[in-house]
Length: 81
Image (cartoon, rainbow, N blue to C red; front, top):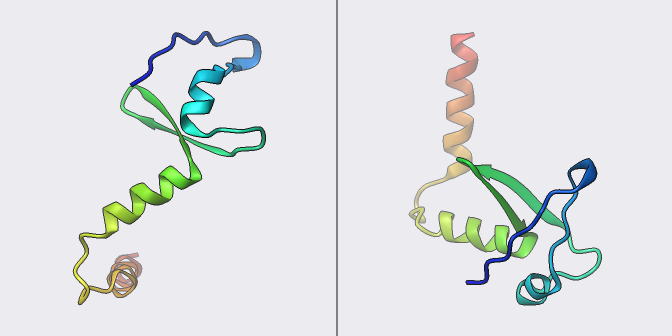
């Protein structure tokens, strides 16, 4: 794991050092997704987010429909309004 100190500059900008960009395959135009986890700022490529989500939902049994569960949940919430 590579660790490099970064400094936030004017207007909240920071530069991702070339060593980290090369390690992660970040090129000009690469879109990153930013999120907060506790007191951490996490930057991920779309590819990394997709892999994380696929891994998360890989444990859902094949006989479970997340769509049906979401619809049922929304209907229940609508009835309570």
